Image (cartoon, rainbow, N blue to C red; front, side, top):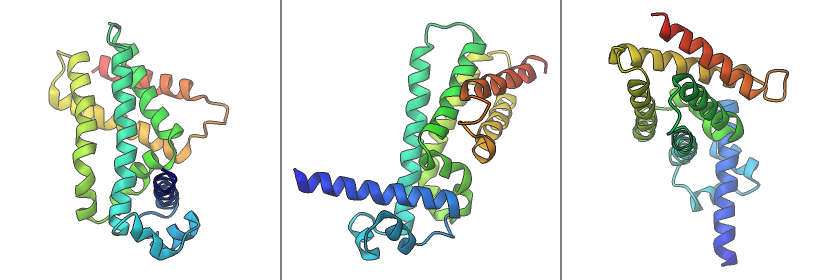
Amino acid sequence: MEAMEEEVGGRRRVLDAAAELFVRQGYSGTTLRQIASEAGIKAGSIYHHFDSKEALFVAVLNDGMLVMTDAFDNTAHELASTAAVADHVRGHVHAHLSAVFENGPYTTAHVTSFFGAPAEVRSQVVPLRDSYEQKWNELFEQLFPVANVKDLRLHRLILFGAMNATAEWFDPSGNLSLDQLSTTIARQFLHGVLHD
């Protein structure tokens, strides 16, 4: 039992270190040696947990996507009986931003490092990313049934751009709270949709 806990703990230390470095230095700027040093292990010990830097990067991003997906699903469940469009948009914006800021580099790596990785590495993460985006597409189709689906996809991309860009500048310990940020982004998004 103790050996299994140490195994899981060692794997998690490697993932945590990798996620931090991928966010700070990007995919190509991060080496396995740096990850091992950050995790407090020998470089060769990483191979006990992961076959390659590529596999480690995919694991970090997959963990991040699972957090995002869980946040979306939990919010959808909580808001299932709420009819107000604004409540749904604000709730899901808040869930997305909370996942980014409360789960650190696992989710932020999608914003800062994904496109810097080789295409063959990105392709392994694309199905989970597509699944998450599809949840938003379906949500928008339900909330805005008279809108053109193609236009809704564009609105979703614009909203994602606004939300994900906050990883570069928003400070959760600053004067603006996460609730205020979520409300502001949702209000701006809805104003654009409702006045097309």
